[in-house]
Length: 364
Length: 77
Image (tube, rainbow over all chains, first blue to last red):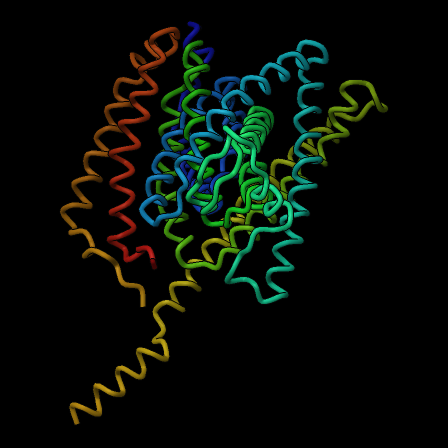
């Protein structure tokens, strides 16, 4: 076998269709909430026999063109703050490099099991905390009848009130000036998370909403710019070492561009809190998925008692199935919201009824 | 009622972008070995997957946009 066939798998029609469909669902979610569609793609490719690093590299290579198309689409709807996206994107790039470095250090010190445990713990702790926060806010919005309107919270108002000379920048999405000393660490944290769990947006979007005071629609659209900047940098890093399987990346892209267009269109039909709802549901479901495999890695590290291989395999399979379920549930909520929004948009409004009645009176 | 800002794309436009997109995918798989051989060399060959990704995102992005518009899925506002 040559080096090429060791690194890149043979692709058949069934595998291609599988990646196309997962890509479509992932794209739909990303187009709607700005990120969150890619975390399932790396394990999905690895389940076909793709080596881990090739799966990560190919996932990254499909993410940046997908984010580009999504960002351009949502920019047409006036939802993107390009300046915020670029500033946070550059700081996220630094976060990716540091995050990847920590990953390597942990892998060297504790091996694959240690690295997997670190990733799973990051999933559980961060998604558990941020997901619960977003879900609580979503439910409060819904119960208080504030589903139509979003206002910056106390933290965001405090951030917006701080004036640090020489660092203040006007952001269209906030309609005010804030210090970039706040945006840079948030971008950095987004990049760190992207390098750890492949989805930086689970920090990037909530941070823009709750820390900076941006509305959900703009935060999720601006996240696509951040994802594009991070994705280009990450792809260059992996492609420089020759790890990108461009066939895998382009098949996933084929499905995800169908999805991202539909997800982006969907944002114009829904109330802003729907974006938070989808994000919270996906985050909390994925958290459960990763929590299930933590005992497997603890056992492999011999930090707890030995586990039967069949039990390990079962837990891993259930975890993967729940991960797919998280994406499917998110996509289902988005599709239902789009269809409901289209139906409501097609119904005649009181104003149009009045116009029609007046018109018929005049003609008679 | 949602009012699209422009008329829906003609069938010819949808089929045209679709045809170009499918052709590009056929070419990618017809020459997969050569393309993978070049891109796996790394170093400055990193430009090959990046350029392919940009090219596909433009062509396939256009196709998917007109595809949904053709089916009546347009933005509300």
